[in-house]
Amino acid sequence: MLRLSLLRPLLACLSLTLATAHADIVIGQSVPTTGVAASTGKALALGASLYFGRVNAGGGVFGEPIDHQVLDDGYDPKRTIANTQELIDKKGALALVSYYGTTNTLDLIRSKVLDNAGIPLIGVHSGAESVRNPGSPFIFQTRAGYKQEIERIVQLLTSNLGVTRVAVVAQKDAYGESGVGELKAALQKRNLTLLGEYWYDRNDGNTVKAAQEAAKLNPEAVVLVAISKPAATFIKKFKELGGTSQLYGLSPIQFEDVIAAVGKKYAHGLGISQVYPYPGNAQVKFIREFQQDTDAVLRSGEYPTYAVFEGYLSARLAVDAIKRAGKAPTRSGVYKALTDMKHYDLGGFIISFDEKNRLGSKYIDLTMVSPTGTLTR
Image (cartoon, rainbow, N blue to C red; front, side, top):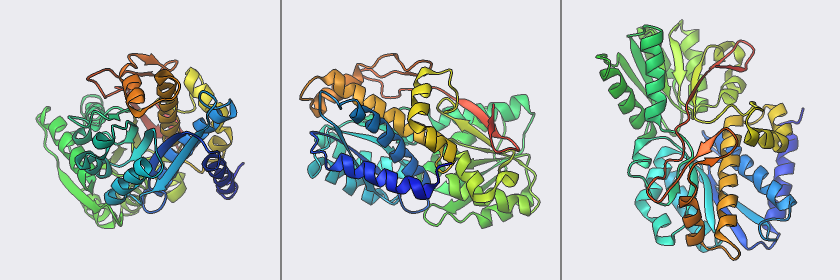
């Protein structure tokens, strides 16, 4: 088993190697590597680094290695914008990959930084409609939206399980507002209303009050529009207070993070919607390649594997677009290559972009944490 303490120097060496390679191909990434969302941010960066490492080990792209530049934004939208400007102006990034957060992405879109530089961003860890429609022509989405995730969860709860009393715990920001809005709409389609709304602050992630209020109500189901760490603390407190509701969360919740924070006992029974194939499913060709590069990480359990997969996928798409753009690639050439990725089959998982469409995937899966800490579907 490879522990996190051993992975840190490994990643540091990888980052140093890439940074000192004098590469012409710079790919940038801004994610939280500190703060409440650090675990997922690090996982996204690790996934991208692992794929770029594979490419560099094979000689790079047209003989040039990838210089993967990762900047910490601490889940702060202002820092995301500043980091992006630095990656463009000072680092000379050709493309950007796998950013994190709804509010961060929404503020980045409003800043017009991507538009002004004409630089593509491949993959953002958000499914909010506010960053998808109309979104930005320079952001190429690799995941389905929260609207689709919530529709699938509500369909299961109401049609399959006969649930009518539903409450929500949500993060107080654009992510939470998007999810709650979609949940209300999905319930209204079925002539149901939301029984209770409980919010927590995005900066401190404190869900104690939400757990206390939800446990008093104890509806049939609670939907968590949350990220991993606050979701974990909510689940533990809620169950300690006697809450027995069925709990379902959206894809930003990484089940490994929840287990690491509160243990299998509390995580057991948590349902999570997923927007990528299970990273352990070796039947998908692309996942077999992913497993080859992430074998030690998958064994360690130190990183959320869905998020590692997401970063890895974005890196793969970026490299393929650069190759399609030809030798001496430009930002506009990479952008154009991405718009030509129609029905791009990764061996069982399809991404499709075109001149007008930036929503690359409609894939949704429902999973649940088992008593042993694995996922069932």
